[in-house]
Length: 169
Picture 1 (cartoon, rainbow, N blue to C red):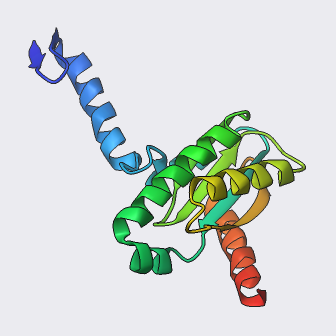
Picture 2: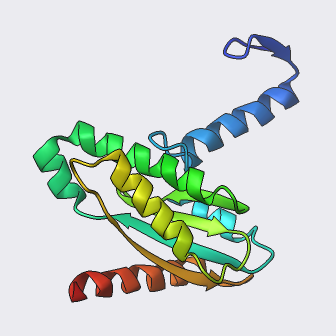
């Protein structure tokens, strides 16, 4: 038997191995700043999708400027706040949340959603209300994801859509 001091319990070696694997996965697959899954888990997760889904990419705008103007501390706090607002707004759906880059997030909604406009508007209003002096904004793009699709191809389409939106504006 092995003593797990962090959990203050005694368990057999099989339970210990299982708990150790869970802890390793948490460190490897969870983004420590937001509590969202990291991009490392996205491909593993995509193989578990057994129904049509909607992927939504959200990308905070001008984070470099915000970090330079207001400090990296304010930028990090903005990223954390944005992640919590994402969770609050989209928790009405069965979904998983991912941070795939410094200021980029993916929501995997485990159903097809025809109209996300109200959710996007609500998220935008709540974000702006939280940081009135900065007036932050974000880009977004959505696509349908079907069982068997390649998650990286879908993410590339989402990223390309946002890239073109940036160039046009």
